[in-house]
Image 1 (cartoon, rainbow, N blue to C red):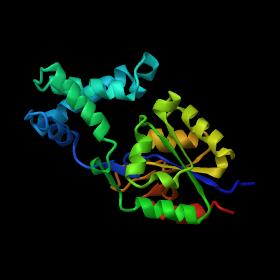
Image 2: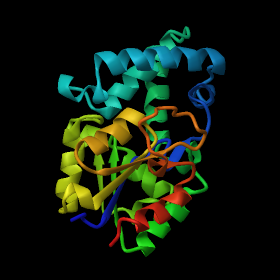
Image 3: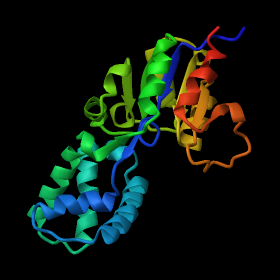
Image 4: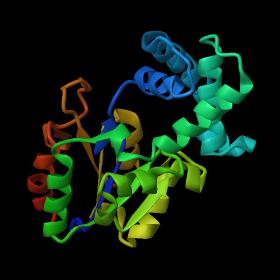
Amino acid sequence: MRSPVRWVLWDVKDTLLKVRASVGEQYCKEARRVGLHLSPVEVDATFRQVYQQYSRGYPNYGVAQGLNGEAWWMKVVRDTLSQCRVEDPALLNTVAHNLYHNFCNAENWEVFPDSKKALESCTSLGLKLGVVSNFDARLEAILHACELRSYFSFLITSEEIRVAKPSPAIFEKALQACGVPAGSVAHVGDHYVKDYLASRSVGIHGFLIDRHNKHRQADIPAEHRLRSLEELASRLQEHLD
């Protein structure tokens, strides 16, 4: 017999909210406060290279190599700016420190227009909500600042539990927090592998938010694909009884 859905797990970045401006623009804005004038286009391109290097060499914020989210991001910012010809160590540290902490502010994030409506609809159906995110320790502060934290019973971040999506272990941790079988849980995210396939690999009902119709994979049934989060509640109603 099919288990009724009782919980919905959520990815956060690019599912419920997104960075408001480009990384290059955000970094250059902070750099201007200490008298540095840089090119947002150059900084953005450099950041992407540095970010990929650190993601490969020190995955999941380097927690297995003695780092944490703050130290990891500080290194990424310093390396990005130093490759853009900023040489003063004090300035590099100041900008990196300020950027890490400023990204907790709501002004740096944009909540998608369909996010709160979807969260409220799920709550009104009697569903409980949790977060499973490849994010660092700032996530709770960001959700508070964006007025989303109150919707969720728990948050699980990859930095906190030292394992990242698409590992099944992060979803198994979430299932423990839910206290119900995987068949009674749904998950919503924007990444085909890390969210959709990974959640379904442990028996969770995976849904892929695809606002811009970017995902062309043939193995995603139409009923698992969302063009808007506002479609989710009606899809879940089919699994409530």
